Length: 461
Image (cartoon, rainbow, N blue to C red; front, side):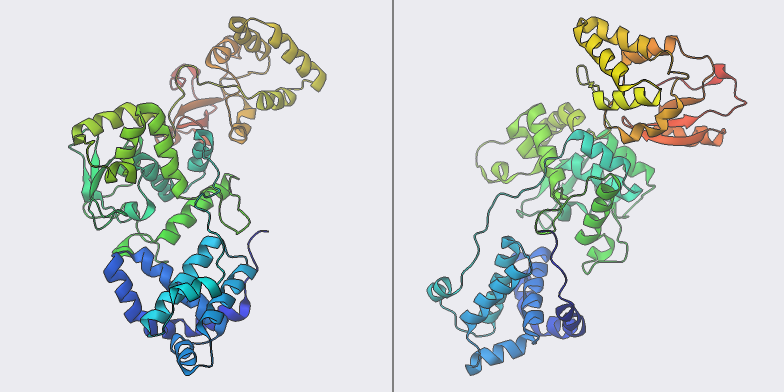
């Protein structure tokens, strides 16, 4: 279905009357916050009432006055509101929140509503608890990370490292990081957590490196505001800003897709799910729940572990949630489609490539590396050939390490490009190297200066 078209008339009316609406519902919103202590709850109720008013083209006080005068039936109003939201393509969850917000505001304003009558008169859609988000793989996360802005990289790595919810993460200040702990950790006060229970979260080496590279100090926010968003968090970015930063990275990585309601299939909260899933496989479900602050751990009464024990478990599992981590033993996979494309670039026909694949399929596993290494000796004209500029377009490695080593043995002695660690890039560019492309594993391809002695090249990575 895609994202529903904007109701231009409603949008214009809301823009003109927004401040008047917010002023009228402010006492109600203050009561909501007093109970929930959550800005998200206030924001949710605000949106629901704005939706009702812009649909009716009336201020909240006018809607309440019509109901109290008898000219407007509240149950018919709310039932028609459900129909309107459904017609414009709102999800069942959005409909439930908007109608619930409108109903609570009417009761707050003195409108008498009977729960049984509401159930009989207002037909609500079924809200499915299970969301239809797309599972996030390590390769997809790496691709999003490479295409993210510097702030986006820091946000993605922080959320993946800590397993925090977004609104728990974005108010974090540099001074809150306890670098003396091993591994470094952050204390989340109960006022910031969803469950209103304070807890600690830990940072991977990768997250610490990115934070330190940002040059932050003192009370600097890790994720400063861009100046947009209604909730500024006193200088921290808003949820909207964080989501936009993440979605922009997904779009550049060509990973952004929407469901029938116009919502991204990969949301910021997907990073928390990724962290939990990977840690559960690496160190066990119970420890993963404790580290990410899952309710199953926070709500149970007896199983307790010390901070030091959780920190050691985090260290044991941090490789699983390190985004640009090199593959461990047995994790190297060769993408046959990518290999086929590169062989085509080298001039081989489809028939020749198909025959190569058949030959490789008949070989013993220990001989496959030798075969492909020999096959590439003619096209591997340098350590990283010119067609490596297209390597980021392929999601997997083309040669296993031993295949690459064998191919290099027959390579031309003149090296035109090299692969280096990302942290070495800045220093090498100052020496005349040219940046070509990023690679997985926190590495990059650089073009070697023509006048450089090949014996003085950086170590091959």
